[in-house]
Length: 132
Image (cartoon, rainbow, N blue to C red; front, top):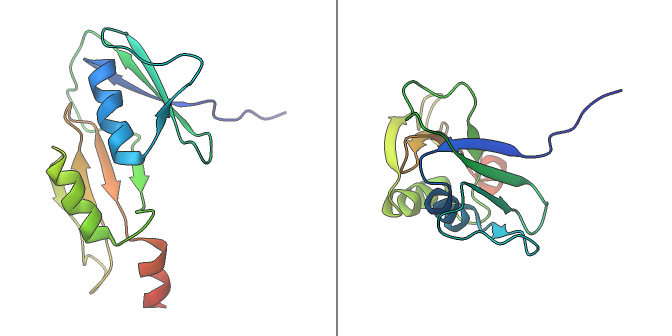
């Protein structure tokens, strides 16, 4: 017997605002049977193509240390650097620039969402294929 991942949960201070930010970042949508509203303490969003779900849950404490688990994101189209620029313009902050860590055209950037939760932007699949 095994288990499967139902959803990924993200603790936060404002579930609605953070879920709206991540919807823009990922192109996710609300569950049509349970749309999110301002003031909701739990907000679920999902990928309309794969069904992957993120659940934002309000907690009383703020983020204090580095995440032990984080999301690694690949651009659906375009390249890593263009996606990094887009996400920074949305209000993400740079945590660590590891582009080029393993030579030209390699690496990733660690960013944080408006509440400080870290995630990484990796190279797109097209960029990886072009480097082979």
